[in-house]
Amino acid sequence: MLSFDLMAVLIVLAAFLVSAVKILKEYERGVIFRLGRVIGAKGPGIIILIPGVDKMVKIDLRTVTLDVPPQDIITRDNVSLKVSAVVYFRVMDANKAVVDVVDFHFATSQLAQTTLRSVCGQGDLDNLLSERDEINERIQTILDKDTEPWGVKVSKVEVKEIDLPEGMRRAMAKQAEAERERRSAIINAEGEYQAAQRLADAAQIISASPAAIQLRYLQTLKDIAAENNSTTVFPIPIDLFRPFFENRPSGSSQAT
Image 1 (cartoon, rainbow, N blue to C red):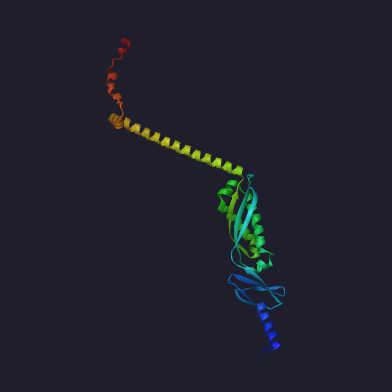
Image 2 (cartoon, rainbow, N blue to C red):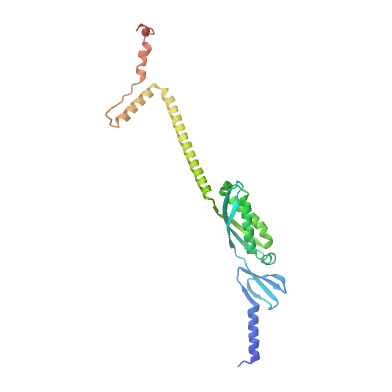
């Protein structure tokens, strides 16, 4: 049997190994403090610490999805609305994320909220609705610049939802309906203009040849006869009566 002293040594050794040996995953880094001073970030793999001397703060290097809650915004044209967004960021420098800021996750969240309110409040409502990509890029650029001293990289920002007041929604719906009606009227007018232009061109072509007018009359008669109507209208060309008017004596009207 093992002696009491040997068992005590084994227990102390096991406790030492448990407290001294740490295993970090591939996406983790451990910032080591030795007697209160940073000696660097280590990992992944097996990390050996000196019990009672070293202290490790574990940092996750994976991309974090930060949900920015709805913020009350007043646009430049005095429209009140709520805007929410989502921010994607990750830690690039574990030492800075631990030493230079108390809680980098909370700090990034607060900075994202204030930046969202500031950027969205600088533009009009129309710009906020139509230039979404430009606003996302501006917010991402500002956040990335401000979080760089913390060792945080903001890779993407997306404005998720724009909650408009009910009155503004009704006004925008009326505006969209009026715009559709305006486009419809323009299209109809354009069609009428093109049809009139084509008719005018056809009239000029037909007027150059009297035979063409007679052929058009016959074509019209054929179309009417195809309808099986009881009454048939036969158009008489005016040119047939022109010789009678031309040969009429000029003084006949006075004589009668």
